Image 1 (cartoon, rainbow, N blue to C red):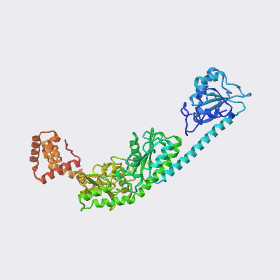
Image 2: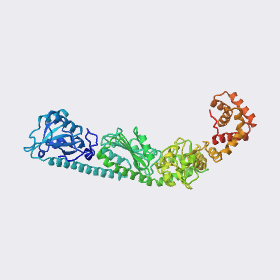
Image 3: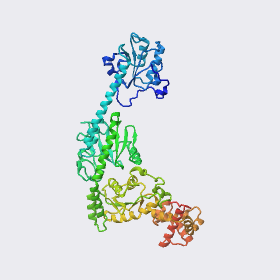
Image 4: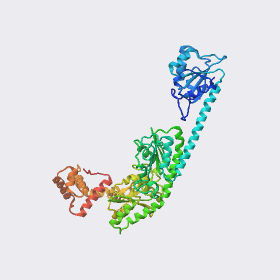
Length: 601
């Protein structure tokens, strides 16, 4: 007799109606029926013996459903169950709604029934619930022990299989042939497709077929293992493994791969969360890879079953070890590329020599730009104005993932340089005087790279220049580091940020007074702001009449008439460089003071 007094004590709060397999293992009804010592006879539901049995349970309650979890073989002698059509239908409906796999009625000379009563047979047949009988010589305990012994054996077999699979994964990882053998072993064992990416989401290696299917022998493309493996795109891996070319693709396996649909957002979330984050979606899972810092990401494509789930942590550890090994083994190559960068940045370098340096680095670019990343701003630093707080860490950055993404805010310069060397094509990165310097192709989205790898750090970005003039771009970038520290974000040459920072250092009343001295006559004559707007647009357009006309949507003569009037009111001349500078500074000061912001068309 079931002695539990309340549904809550036995999980009565669970949703009813579906069997739940929490570990992926099960014994089938047919397995139990096939064992003669249990004396189980099928009365109804012969066609449903493929149902899994997760537990065996005995209850004499008339309404046992609230105490059932689902998937049980429910045994009863029918002691208090009225054998009427209505009572049996209600009893069977309650049992079936709880997700029970089958009902077993105990028979015996001294028990209430020696055969299954007709009302119970009809009720189970109507409900589609298998009805078994247990022979009089077999106690319910024997059936219970048989179920749990079979499940224990399956669990033991699953653990042993997991150990064997992990051994194969370890052997693959120890082969010294990169990520590919490990991913291949995983795909064959689990049928789950995998990809390894760098922190920018670029695929380094992939295992399994393109649809996330079997990935077993003969089920993949290419040479039969369905795996591609390559280091970071744009660069040799430095040790010549597996025929990986300078573009990072393993030629032996037919090319690289792409992230499956829906996984990009998960990758971004994990990168933003850092080394302890993970993300899931239906059929997708992303795990971080690395020991102390984020070195890459593992993308699992497909449903990961319970047995495969036991192996995921081991797979993450093995892949993390490989990425850490690559990081350490890449130090000589990073030193070589730092030396290449030094030659490229020499003021005496010729155009031909600069092209040779880029070719040696595997970087193809007709124009390059330099980047300088400074030391992180401490919380006690001077950057306390609006944007400066974002850089110092007292407020979140305006965009991009949090500093936890890769430890960029606190990473020492050498560690940051190594991360950037993996991120930028060519890997032309070095550490000099406590700052990280790099030269990248003009087309690279350097803001995205800095957001990902150097969040919270001041950075200057030089102008695009021919390769042999990279040293001039570096001077620009280095000079903008402190501007970036003040503004709280990376600063690009030519963006007007330097003037903005210098003006922000002044007091607002002084800025407003300076602007009033020049612009008040224009605002008095034209309260609508037309004169100031036209003057500001003309200065922003490089003093071009045609461009100012285009931006404002005015005739060229109208622009000239407005500016002539402005010069009469201010007593200044447009053809005088000093006067133009004073007017430009007044417009910028007015904007910085926040009293009035002229439109720009």
